[in-house]
Image (cartoon, rainbow, N blue to C red; front, side, top):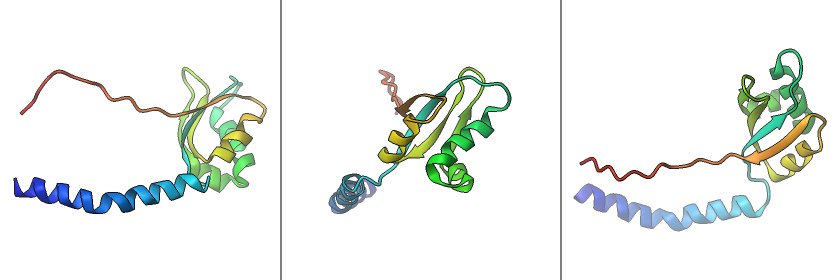
Length: 115
């Protein structure tokens, strides 16, 4: 019980500073979030095209490699990457890019109770 109380107190103490940092990051427009980029289907290996497309936005292949989180190549052609709002806008203008959507995480709701 004492550990739970300590955890709650620490959370209450640090919450204002955490919220302030999150607000600063989103208010200056430089914050990045994960987006899914859907691209036209092409012949050959899609990873090279994904890297080339993203490198045109980031300015280098090394920066593009750091931004790519996952490459989709079986069912769809695309990739997920950490992008700023400005980079999303630029990427939407690139040839072969069909759609750029923010990644969404869903949480399952269950009635099961485990002690």
